[in-house]
Image 1: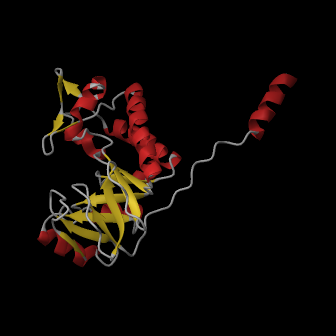
Image 2 (image 1 turned 180 degrees about the vertical axis):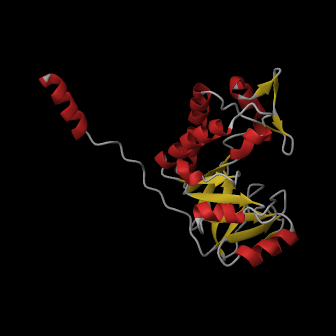
Image 3 (image 1 turned 30 degrees about the horizontal axis):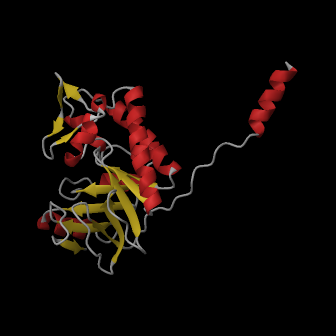
Length: 251
């Protein structure tokens, strides 16, 4: 009994591992969304989102893009090496029809753990490169899974990704699924594509306050979003391809 009591005391005295500190994105500044290629941001921009394979911009708050729930179209060779982690029906991968991206199979704890190891490695790479935040894209991929992936699967996997981000010293951004409050699993901010077009900005703002960064792709949606939300949220108009020389406009 004394040995057990001593062990309990030792465990109580051992400090829990501390999470790395991280900074939240700035408010009161414009932001740019540059997944289709790098461009020099104008002076009004204080935050930039770039693909994890790109370098961050000196002097700005940089968010690293990681496709956490689907594959990138140019990474099929990589995912063939991890074929069991791609969602399949009748032996064929299920794809996001809009982008041709395969959905990742997050249905079991073992597969979520294996995928989180990959995403965690990429996230640590973002931190090493100098990024301050990370957005994990396609949280709503369950809605394109033909019923194979549940909302609970997505929530559990999202919680793991958020822990990976925070452990690497990065703020974690929710991407998609406006109806769900991602702060429940620790998300810090949101990247909201076309929330003005689909009348979703209020849902994101209810969860994240001013830490919502809006991308619109149509001029009329951009004008509407600026009128409704431009005094509170950062809103950028981009071309759908997010090309370096494409449309860049701010409220």
